[in-house]
Image (cartoon, rainbow, N blue to C red; front, side, top):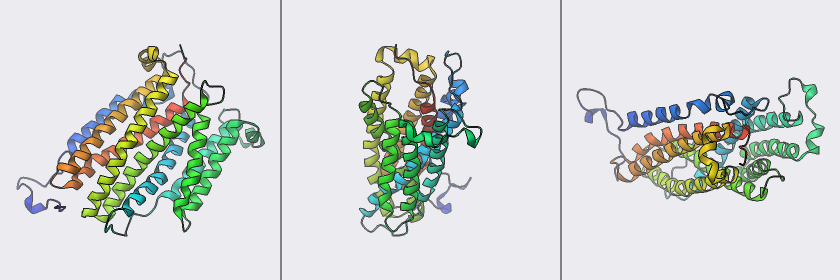
Length: 334
Protein backbone atom coordinates (compact mmCIF):
# COMPACT_ATOMS: atom_id res chain seq x y z
CA UNK A 1 0.00 0.00 0.00
CA UNK A 2 1.43 3.35 -1.01
CA UNK A 3 0.95 6.13 1.49
CA UNK A 4 3.04 8.82 -0.11
CA UNK A 5 1.31 12.10 -0.88
CA UNK A 6 1.36 13.89 -4.25
CA UNK A 7 4.39 16.10 -4.66
CA UNK A 8 4.78 19.44 -6.38
CA UNK A 9 6.36 17.73 -9.37
CA UNK A 10 3.20 15.72 -10.04
CA UNK A 11 0.96 18.78 -9.90
CA UNK A 12 -0.41 20.34 -13.01
CA UNK A 13 1.83 22.97 -14.49
CA UNK A 14 -0.97 25.52 -14.42
CA UNK A 15 -1.10 25.69 -10.64
CA UNK A 16 -0.26 24.06 -7.32
CA UNK A 17 -1.55 20.67 -6.27
CA UNK A 18 -4.95 20.74 -4.58
CA UNK A 19 -6.44 18.16 -2.28
CA UNK A 20 -9.56 16.66 -3.89
CA UNK A 21 -12.85 17.28 -2.20
CA UNK A 22 -11.82 20.26 -0.06
CA UNK A 23 -14.30 22.56 -1.81
CA UNK A 24 -17.14 20.04 -1.53
CA UNK A 25 -16.46 19.41 2.14
CA UNK A 26 -16.37 23.14 2.86
CA UNK A 27 -19.63 23.63 0.95
CA UNK A 28 -21.33 20.88 2.97
CA UNK A 29 -20.24 22.52 6.22
CA UNK A 30 -21.48 25.94 5.09
CA UNK A 31 -24.86 24.48 4.10
CA UNK A 32 -25.14 22.66 7.41
CA UNK A 33 -24.35 25.86 9.29
CA UNK A 34 -26.99 27.76 7.32
CA UNK A 35 -29.51 24.99 7.98
CA UNK A 36 -29.17 25.43 11.74
CA UNK A 37 -28.50 29.17 11.83
CA UNK A 38 -31.83 30.17 13.35
CA UNK A 39 -31.76 27.83 16.38
CA UNK A 40 -28.07 28.56 16.95
CA UNK A 41 -28.72 32.30 17.23
CA UNK A 42 -29.78 31.56 20.76
CA UNK A 43 -32.80 30.83 22.94
CA UNK A 44 -34.64 33.97 21.82
CA UNK A 45 -34.60 32.85 18.18
CA UNK A 46 -35.62 29.28 19.03
CA UNK A 47 -38.46 30.57 21.23
CA UNK A 48 -39.71 33.13 18.71
CA UNK A 49 -43.51 32.93 18.32
CA UNK A 50 -43.75 29.62 20.17
CA UNK A 51 -45.63 31.02 23.15
CA UNK A 52 -42.95 29.61 25.46
CA UNK A 53 -40.87 31.56 27.97
CA UNK A 54 -37.16 31.01 28.47
CA UNK A 55 -35.88 30.37 31.97
CA UNK A 56 -33.56 33.07 33.38
CA UNK A 57 -29.99 32.68 32.13
CA UNK A 58 -30.84 30.15 29.43
CA UNK A 59 -28.00 31.33 27.16
CA UNK A 60 -25.43 31.04 29.95
CA UNK A 61 -26.65 27.60 31.00
CA UNK A 62 -26.52 26.43 27.36
CA UNK A 63 -22.91 27.62 27.05
CA UNK A 64 -21.87 25.94 30.32
CA UNK A 65 -23.45 22.65 29.28
CA UNK A 66 -21.73 22.80 25.90
CA UNK A 67 -18.37 23.26 27.66
CA UNK A 68 -19.20 20.41 30.03
CA UNK A 69 -20.08 18.07 27.15
CA UNK A 70 -16.90 19.05 25.29
CA UNK A 71 -14.83 18.37 28.40
CA UNK A 72 -16.32 14.87 28.48
CA UNK A 73 -15.61 14.17 24.81
CA UNK A 74 -11.88 14.95 24.80
CA UNK A 75 -10.63 12.60 27.55
CA UNK A 76 -13.05 9.77 26.76
CA UNK A 77 -12.05 9.92 23.09
CA UNK A 78 -8.38 9.82 24.02
CA UNK A 79 -8.87 6.74 26.16
CA UNK A 80 -10.65 4.95 23.31
CA UNK A 81 -8.10 5.81 20.61
CA UNK A 82 -5.10 5.02 22.79
CA UNK A 83 -6.57 1.60 23.40
CA UNK A 84 -7.09 1.14 19.65
CA UNK A 85 -3.55 2.34 18.93
CA UNK A 86 -2.07 -0.28 21.24
CA UNK A 87 -3.72 -2.95 19.08
CA UNK A 88 -2.01 -1.70 15.89
CA UNK A 89 1.13 -3.75 15.16
CA UNK A 90 4.25 -1.59 14.98
CA UNK A 91 2.43 1.57 16.03
CA UNK A 92 4.85 4.49 16.60
CA UNK A 93 5.30 5.34 20.28
CA UNK A 94 5.23 9.09 19.70
CA UNK A 95 1.58 9.84 20.19
CA UNK A 96 0.22 13.39 20.56
CA UNK A 97 0.32 15.22 23.85
CA UNK A 98 -2.70 14.48 26.00
CA UNK A 99 -5.43 17.09 26.27
CA UNK A 100 -7.20 15.19 29.04
CA UNK A 101 -5.97 17.60 31.72
CA UNK A 102 -8.15 20.25 30.09
CA UNK A 103 -11.04 18.48 31.78
CA UNK A 104 -10.53 21.27 34.32
CA UNK A 105 -12.70 23.33 31.96
CA UNK A 106 -15.45 20.83 32.70
CA UNK A 107 -14.97 21.45 36.43
CA UNK A 108 -15.36 25.20 35.86
CA UNK A 109 -18.52 24.66 33.79
CA UNK A 110 -19.91 22.24 36.39
CA UNK A 111 -19.14 24.78 39.13
CA UNK A 112 -21.04 27.44 37.20
CA UNK A 113 -24.01 25.11 36.80
CA UNK A 114 -23.87 24.27 40.50
CA UNK A 115 -24.00 28.00 41.29
CA UNK A 116 -27.17 28.26 39.18
CA UNK A 117 -28.74 25.36 41.09
CA UNK A 118 -27.69 26.93 44.42
CA UNK A 119 -29.67 30.09 43.60
CA UNK A 120 -32.90 28.29 42.76
CA UNK A 121 -32.07 27.78 39.06
CA UNK A 122 -31.44 31.49 38.57
CA UNK A 123 -28.25 33.20 37.45
CA UNK A 124 -26.50 34.56 40.60
CA UNK A 125 -25.52 38.22 40.51
CA UNK A 126 -23.46 38.09 43.71
CA UNK A 127 -21.77 35.52 45.92
CA UNK A 128 -24.27 36.28 48.67
CA UNK A 129 -27.06 34.80 46.55
CA UNK A 130 -25.35 31.40 46.33
CA UNK A 131 -26.54 28.99 49.01
CA UNK A 132 -23.76 26.40 48.97
CA UNK A 133 -25.22 24.49 51.89
CA UNK A 134 -28.52 24.25 50.06
CA UNK A 135 -26.87 22.11 47.39
CA UNK A 136 -26.75 19.22 49.83
CA UNK A 137 -30.49 19.48 50.45
CA UNK A 138 -31.66 18.81 46.89
CA UNK A 139 -31.15 16.04 44.36
CA UNK A 140 -30.04 18.45 41.63
CA UNK A 141 -27.62 20.11 44.03
CA UNK A 142 -25.98 16.82 44.98
CA UNK A 143 -25.64 15.83 41.33
CA UNK A 144 -24.09 19.23 40.53
CA UNK A 145 -21.52 18.82 43.32
CA UNK A 146 -20.79 15.27 42.13
CA UNK A 147 -19.99 16.59 38.64
CA UNK A 148 -17.65 19.29 39.99
CA UNK A 149 -15.73 16.81 42.14
CA UNK A 150 -15.66 14.14 39.42
CA UNK A 151 -14.12 16.54 36.88
CA UNK A 152 -11.48 17.62 39.41
CA UNK A 153 -10.60 13.99 40.15
CA UNK A 154 -10.49 13.20 36.42
CA UNK A 155 -8.04 16.06 35.88
CA UNK A 156 -5.78 14.72 38.65
CA UNK A 157 -5.98 11.20 37.23
CA UNK A 158 -4.99 12.50 33.79
CA UNK A 159 -1.71 13.77 35.26
CA UNK A 160 -1.03 10.61 37.24
CA UNK A 161 1.06 7.59 36.28
CA UNK A 162 -2.12 5.71 35.32
CA UNK A 163 -4.26 8.15 33.32
CA UNK A 164 -6.64 5.37 32.29
CA UNK A 165 -8.28 5.45 35.74
CA UNK A 166 -9.90 8.77 34.82
CA UNK A 167 -12.59 6.71 33.10
CA UNK A 168 -14.23 6.20 36.50
CA UNK A 169 -14.76 9.86 37.50
CA UNK A 170 -15.75 10.66 33.90
CA UNK A 171 -18.26 7.83 34.09
CA UNK A 172 -19.63 9.40 37.27
CA UNK A 173 -20.20 12.66 35.36
CA UNK A 174 -22.12 10.79 32.65
CA UNK A 175 -24.30 9.04 35.25
CA UNK A 176 -24.96 12.33 37.05
CA UNK A 177 -25.96 14.02 33.77
CA UNK A 178 -28.27 11.14 32.89
CA UNK A 179 -29.98 11.31 36.29
CA UNK A 180 -30.21 15.12 36.22
CA UNK A 181 -31.95 15.09 32.83
CA UNK A 182 -34.71 12.80 34.12
CA UNK A 183 -36.08 13.71 37.56
CA UNK A 184 -37.98 11.03 39.53
CA UNK A 185 -41.33 12.71 38.79
CA UNK A 186 -40.90 11.97 35.08
CA UNK A 187 -42.76 8.97 33.66
CA UNK A 188 -40.34 5.97 33.52
CA UNK A 189 -37.45 8.18 34.60
CA UNK A 190 -34.99 5.29 34.82
CA UNK A 191 -35.61 4.39 31.18
CA UNK A 192 -34.93 7.99 30.18
CA UNK A 193 -31.75 8.07 32.28
CA UNK A 194 -30.55 4.85 30.70
CA UNK A 195 -31.12 6.21 27.20
CA UNK A 196 -29.33 9.46 28.03
CA UNK A 197 -26.40 7.57 29.53
CA UNK A 198 -25.89 5.45 26.41
CA UNK A 199 -26.41 8.49 24.17
CA UNK A 200 -23.81 10.55 26.02
CA UNK A 201 -21.22 7.77 26.07
CA UNK A 202 -21.59 7.00 22.36
CA UNK A 203 -21.53 10.66 21.36
CA UNK A 204 -18.49 11.46 23.53
CA UNK A 205 -16.49 8.50 22.23
CA UNK A 206 -17.42 9.32 18.63
CA UNK A 207 -16.54 13.02 18.73
CA UNK A 208 -13.58 12.82 21.08
CA UNK A 209 -12.24 9.68 19.39
CA UNK A 210 -12.20 11.26 15.93
CA UNK A 211 -10.42 14.33 17.27
CA UNK A 212 -7.69 12.21 18.83
CA UNK A 213 -7.38 9.99 15.73
CA UNK A 214 -6.67 13.06 13.59
CA UNK A 215 -4.16 14.38 16.12
CA UNK A 216 -2.46 10.97 16.19
CA UNK A 217 -2.26 10.73 12.40
CA UNK A 218 -0.75 14.19 12.21
CA UNK A 219 1.86 13.16 14.77
CA UNK A 220 2.66 9.83 13.12
CA UNK A 221 2.75 11.11 9.56
CA UNK A 222 1.86 9.08 6.42
CA UNK A 223 2.58 5.60 7.75
CA UNK A 224 0.68 2.37 7.26
CA UNK A 225 -0.10 2.16 10.97
CA UNK A 226 -2.07 5.40 10.69
CA UNK A 227 -4.35 3.87 8.08
CA UNK A 228 -4.83 0.82 10.31
CA UNK A 229 -5.73 3.03 13.29
CA UNK A 230 -8.22 5.01 11.20
CA UNK A 231 -9.80 1.76 10.01
CA UNK A 232 -10.17 0.45 13.56
CA UNK A 233 -11.75 3.69 14.68
CA UNK A 234 -14.12 3.68 11.66
CA UNK A 235 -15.50 0.29 12.66
CA UNK A 236 -16.08 1.42 16.24
CA UNK A 237 -17.58 4.73 15.06
CA UNK A 238 -20.19 2.88 12.99
CA UNK A 239 -21.43 1.16 16.16
CA UNK A 240 -21.34 4.46 18.08
CA UNK A 241 -23.36 6.21 15.36
CA UNK A 242 -25.98 3.46 15.55
CA UNK A 243 -26.13 3.89 19.33
CA UNK A 244 -26.48 7.68 19.09
CA UNK A 245 -29.24 7.36 16.48
CA UNK A 246 -31.25 4.68 18.28
CA UNK A 247 -31.14 6.34 21.70
CA UNK A 248 -31.76 9.79 20.22
CA UNK A 249 -34.87 8.68 18.34
CA UNK A 250 -36.21 6.77 21.34
CA UNK A 251 -35.61 9.70 23.71
CA UNK A 252 -37.29 12.12 21.31
CA UNK A 253 -40.37 9.93 20.98
CA UNK A 254 -40.62 9.73 24.77
CA UNK A 255 -40.80 13.53 24.96
CA UNK A 256 -42.70 14.11 21.73
CA UNK A 257 -45.27 11.38 21.02
CA UNK A 258 -45.25 10.17 17.42
CA UNK A 259 -48.56 11.86 16.62
CA UNK A 260 -47.24 15.33 17.54
CA UNK A 261 -43.61 15.13 16.38
CA UNK A 262 -44.01 17.07 13.11
CA UNK A 263 -45.93 19.87 14.81
CA UNK A 264 -43.59 20.18 17.78
CA UNK A 265 -40.49 20.13 15.58
CA UNK A 266 -41.55 23.47 14.12
CA UNK A 267 -43.73 25.03 16.81
CA UNK A 268 -41.62 24.53 19.95
CA UNK A 269 -38.14 25.76 20.84
CA UNK A 270 -37.09 22.26 21.89
CA UNK A 271 -38.37 20.79 18.62
CA UNK A 272 -36.65 23.40 16.47
CA UNK A 273 -33.33 22.88 18.19
CA UNK A 274 -33.74 19.11 18.02
CA UNK A 275 -34.38 19.43 14.28
CA UNK A 276 -31.20 21.46 13.94
CA UNK A 277 -29.29 18.75 15.78
CA UNK A 278 -30.76 16.04 13.55
CA UNK A 279 -29.75 17.94 10.40
CA UNK A 280 -26.23 18.33 11.72
CA UNK A 281 -25.95 14.66 12.61
CA UNK A 282 -27.11 13.74 9.10
CA UNK A 283 -24.36 15.92 7.64
CA UNK A 284 -21.81 14.42 10.04
CA UNK A 285 -22.88 10.91 9.04
CA UNK A 286 -22.47 11.82 5.35
CA UNK A 287 -18.99 13.19 6.01
CA UNK A 288 -18.12 10.06 7.98
CA UNK A 289 -19.25 7.87 5.08
CA UNK A 290 -17.18 9.96 2.65
CA UNK A 291 -14.11 9.57 4.87
CA UNK A 292 -14.58 5.80 5.15
CA UNK A 293 -14.96 5.43 1.37
CA UNK A 294 -11.77 7.39 0.79
CA UNK A 295 -9.99 5.29 3.36
CA UNK A 296 -10.89 2.13 1.44
CA UNK A 297 -10.72 3.28 -2.19
CA UNK A 298 -8.52 6.37 -2.60
CA UNK A 299 -4.93 5.97 -3.86
CA UNK A 300 -3.86 7.91 -0.78
CA UNK A 301 -5.95 6.50 2.10
CA UNK A 302 -5.02 9.40 4.35
CA UNK A 303 -7.01 11.67 2.03
CA UNK A 304 -9.85 10.55 4.32
CA UNK A 305 -8.54 13.11 6.81
CA UNK A 306 -10.02 15.96 4.73
CA UNK A 307 -13.72 15.13 5.29
CA UNK A 308 -12.85 13.85 8.77
CA UNK A 309 -11.57 17.30 9.77
CA UNK A 310 -14.84 18.85 8.59
CA UNK A 311 -16.65 16.10 10.50
CA UNK A 312 -14.89 17.14 13.71
CA UNK A 313 -15.96 20.75 13.17
CA UNK A 314 -19.55 19.67 12.56
CA UNK A 315 -19.46 17.50 15.69
CA UNK A 316 -18.37 20.59 17.62
CA UNK A 317 -21.54 22.30 16.40
CA UNK A 318 -23.54 19.27 17.54
CA UNK A 319 -22.09 19.72 21.04
CA UNK A 320 -23.13 23.39 21.04
CA UNK A 321 -26.66 22.52 19.89
CA UNK A 322 -26.85 19.81 22.56
CA UNK A 323 -25.95 22.36 25.22
CA UNK A 324 -28.74 24.64 23.99
CA UNK A 325 -31.18 21.73 23.85
CA UNK A 326 -30.72 20.93 27.55
CA UNK A 327 -31.42 24.55 28.54
CA UNK A 328 -34.70 24.98 26.66
CA UNK A 329 -38.15 24.14 28.07
CA UNK A 330 -39.30 20.62 27.33
CA UNK A 331 -42.21 20.25 24.90
CA UNK A 332 -45.68 19.66 26.26
CA UNK A 333 -46.96 16.09 25.87
CA UNK A 334 -50.19 16.67 23.96
